[in-house]
Image (cartoon, rainbow, N blue to C red; front, side):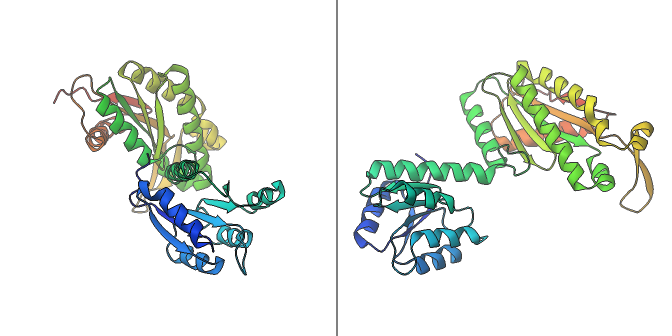
Length: 313
């Protein structure tokens, strides 16, 4: 089951018995459950203390569930909160109306407590993934990356973690702007995904930990081929993101932090590879620290490069 110790569920339903049944059904999962009898009260509670999920009755006095859902979606604070509508109505038109205004799911009363629990858990898992994912690339973010690394460490199977980022990317952004920079990041993300799918192992994982920083979790046998292929593909297209003049010069004229003119090379890729072939790995933070040391060395080299941590202690 999902670890729901601190997950907050808001039930908006004017029927006290229904609220009691919902609370009883969800009690085994330890959610923090709040209640509202009216749409207005539910909106106020949701905006004051945004829940992780809302169970919303369609038939409410004064303000029905459709209007409540509509207002939830219009408010920035509650726009992304999953809404599961509870209804005793069987007509398809009612369900279509709710889904059109932003509801995520429907549950018809009387409901099976097991189904309610599974629906709630499924939406909470999806919300956790959505919140973790990078809005730029759609790849999983830090939270899931850490979870996957922790799981692989616990399995004690052969492990390789590739930390991938760009060299000279700040100078590119300074010259061409962040919108163009985002295109470079998305291009790199696509290449990593294509390479891992092509030559990685079946259980490999890719994450986007922010900015131009990516993580690929693979096996030691696949790590070096992945690094080589990502670098080759990136270098083959990197200059396409530059003007003809900069492409011909092979560098960008820009300013350093002190305002002095400098020449910065074309953007390139640095890959740090950490494996458990020569030393025991026991925590994601340890792996990140080792990777930072390897990346510092790799980034000091010209052009796109990769490097291993070959130390045994």
